Length: 317
Image (cartoon, rainbow, N blue to C red):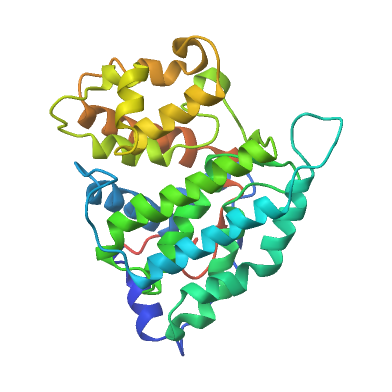
C-alpha cells in the first residue's frame, strides 16, 4: 500500500493529473507488459497486505471502522437497494435476466457521484478515475456475467482509495471484513436475482464459479486455528456453526446453497484443498493458484483497465 503513487496523489492533488483508465492488454503477448507493470506490483502487494492483516482474525473481532468505511458501506447499500427497485423481468431465457442491464445503467450514470461521496475533498479530482473500477466490479452488462476479473476490479477500486489517502493502513481489517464482505453479499444478490452467468468459468475444475479472494483471505483467517482444520470445511455441521466468523466457510455455505449433489463432484478443487494438512499451506497454495488461474490468464486480464493510480508503466528498478 505504501507505493510512491500514494504520496504523489495524496500530497499533490493540484499537480497530479488523474485519467480515465483504459484497457492496455489486447493480445496474449501483451501479458508480459501486465506482469512487469506497476499496476501488477501494486495490486498483488495490496492483496498480500490485506492477507497479512486478517491472519488469525475472526469476522466478529473488534477493529476500527473509519468514516470512509462507513461511506463505502452506504455506497454498497445503495447498490443493494437498486436491486430491490429493479425486479427481474419475464423472459424466455432462464439465465441472464435483462433487468440487470437496467440496474447497471443506473450505476453507470451514478458511479462518479457515488465515489465522490467517499473521497476526501483533496482527492475529489480522482472520482472519475476511481469510478471506472467500481463500474467494472459488478459484472458485464452485455453478457450479464460475473467472474474473478470483476472481483479483481473491486480490489483495485479499494487499492485506488488507499492510494489517494481515503483508506489507510489501519482500515485493513474493515476493508476485508466489512467492505469486501458487504460487496460479496451484494454480488451474490445480483447473481441470484438476475441469474448471472459465471464469466470464464472452469466448471468443476475452477475453485468457484464467481469468487476467489474470499478464499485467500478466508484461509488466512484460519491459520493456526486450534480446532478447525482444512478437512473440516466439507462438513455441513462445521460450516453452519462457524460461518459467521470465517469468510472461507461463508463461501462454502453459499456453494452448498446453490449447488446440489456430492461436494467432491460440484467443487472438485475445493474438495482437493480439504486434504491439505494445514491452513498456512492452503493460504500459500491459493495465492499461487490465484496468480496462475486469474492474474496470468489473458481472458481475465484483457479487461483490466490502467490509469494514473494503477499504471501500465513498468516497475521502476
